[in-house]
Image 1 (cartoon, rainbow, N blue to C red):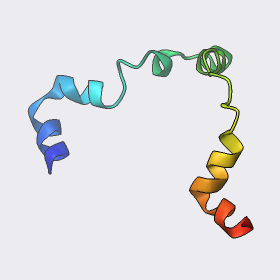
Image 2 (cartoon, rainbow, N blue to C red):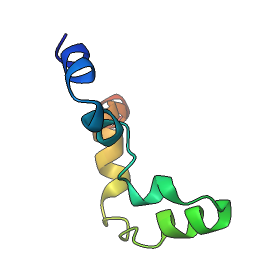
Image 3 (cartoon, rainbow, N blue to C red):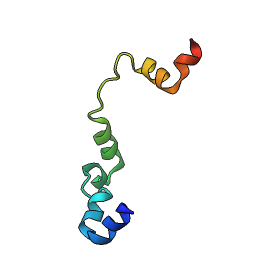
Image 4 (cartoon, rainbow, N blue to C red):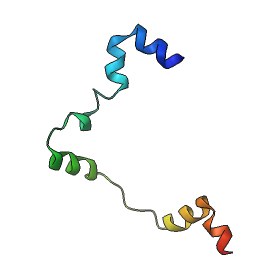
Length: 63
């Protein structure tokens, strides 16, 4: 309901809502888009695999 009201009341807000101001979505070249998206990915935390296993319930099943 809130989304419908927003869409009908603020046409300028609709473009913002759907990403027209997102720099990545304005890139037309696929290679440039991929480079942009991969440029600032942080390193994987040391215990990421263990955290994923715990969050998915796999750690409890293995114990």
